[in-house]
Image 1 (spheres, rainbow, N blue to C red):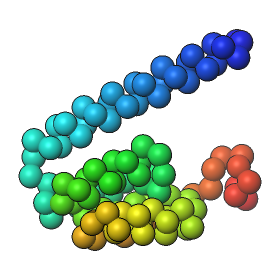
Image 2 (image 1 turned 30 degrees about the horizontal axis):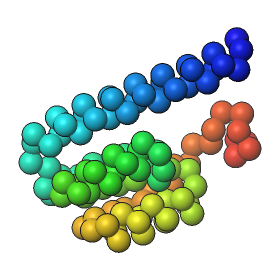
Image 3 (image 1 turned 45 degrees about the vertical axis):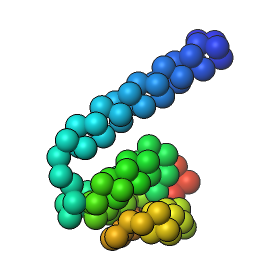
Image 4 (image 1 turned 90 degrees about the vertical axis):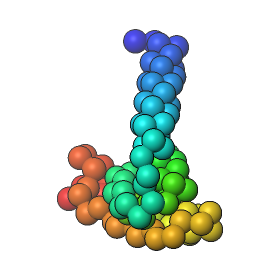
Length: 103
């Protein structure tokens, strides 16, 4: 594959993720989410963080999971500054396969 093909594939994947996220949030808004608990893996950044932010805006209590404690703390502060009533960060202990944190 060429670099241009890789870039195009990544752009299409990102566009698909955005559209899927919009659909999920649209359906969730039809329901009353106030007081419900949402557990979001990968919630410290990226699409997971955006979902956590939107669900908190809808009145959910959110639990965000991620590998990096500093990213989780930063995400929690940001969510609470934006009005999240209850946000609990949980560090996932499973290492990335082949990653620097694998043992």
